[in-house]
Length: 381
Ligand code: ATP
Ligand code: MG
Image (cartoon, rainbow, N blue to C red; front, side, top):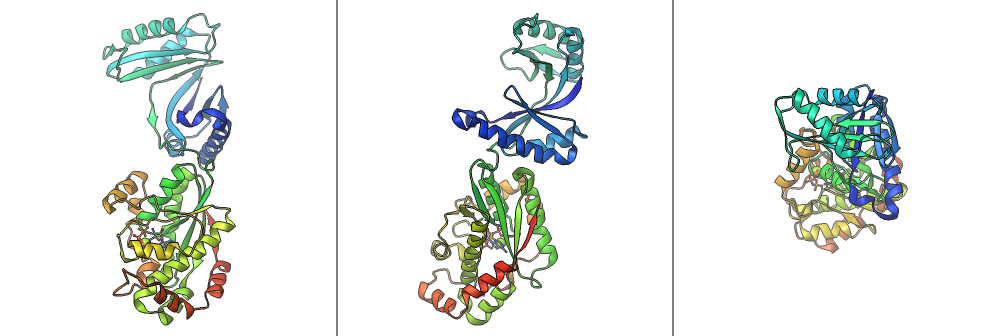
C-alpha cells in the first residue's frame, strides 16, 4: 500500500488532436512543481499520478497551483485482490466524516470478481456499519468514497480544487513587463493561466530604486513561478535612460517617453525569448499614463500585440485577484518603483505626438536601448 496523488485535469481541453501534447506538457509541469519534494510523476491509463513525495500537504499545495490541474485527490494505492483489506482502508479513510455519503466504484479491469454496483453496495454497507455519523444519499452526497479498480486498487475521498487553466507552453510565449506593483503580476498570471509560457522584464533604476525593490520583484516572479514552472526574469538597468529623459525632455512628457522606452526594450527581450506578445498590467484611466491617448502613444512603438488582461478591471477587482493568487501581500510592500522616482508634477493626459517626438529627438535612442539591453541581468526563478 502507498500514498499518492491522483491529478484531475480540465477535460474540455483534452478533446481532439491536442490531447497528447496537453498531457505531456502537464506531466512536465507537475514534475517541475514537485521536483524538490522528490516526487515521481507518471501517466497511466489517461490518469496522472504523483508518488514518493516527502510531505503530502506540501505536494497537494504545489500540484494544485499548476496551470492545467483541475483538482487533486490524495489517494491510496493497494493490491486489488484482498477486498476485505480494501474495505478496511475505506472505513479508516471515512473516520471522522459526518453527514451523507455514497461509494462510487469504477472498474476498468472487467475480470474483477465484483462488478461496480456490487463493490459500491458492499463497501457502502461496511462503512455505514463502522461509522454512525454517516447516512447514504446517492443523489447529492456530501462525501464520495471513490474506488477505482485498475491494475491496482485506488481509494480516495478528498478532492482539493486547483487553479485550472491550461499547462504553460501549450499556447506560445509572451513577455511580461513586471513592476513591483499589484497589477502586473495579476496580468501575467491571467495570461499564463491560458497556457502561455511567460518571461519577465523589470526596469531597475539603481540607486534610485534599491536592491530590496529588485528582490520584491523577484519574489513576485517566484510566486507566479509556482504556477508557471520557471520564469526567466530580465533586470534592465534603466537609470541612464531615466536621467537622460529627465534632463532633456519636457517634464510633463517624461513618464510617457519613459514608458515608450520600456515597450521598445521589452519587445527586444521578447524577440530574444521567442515570445510573440507583450503583457502589461495597464487599466484604462488608472493613472495619467493610462488614458486612452497615452496608451496609444506607448502602444505604437512596438509591432507585437500587447495583452492587457486587466484593462477593464477596477483597482478593487485587480486587488481581489491579487489576493486570490497570493501576490497582494508582496506587491503591497512599500519599496519604490522606477516610475515613481521621476514622476512629473503634471503628467500629460492628452499627449501630443509632435511633443513626444521632439523630446525623443534629443536622445540617442538606439544607443541607449542597446546599452540597456547589453546590461541585462538574467535570473531564472
Ligand atoms: P503596477 O501596479 O503593475 O505597478 P501601475 O498601476 O503602477 O501598475 P504603471 O506604473 O503606469 O501602473 O505601469 C503600467 C505597467 O507598466 C505595469 O502594469 C507594468 O506592466 C509596466 N511597468 C511599470 N513599471 C515597470 C517596471 N519598473 N518594470 C517593468 N514593467 C513596469
Ligand atoms: Mg507600477
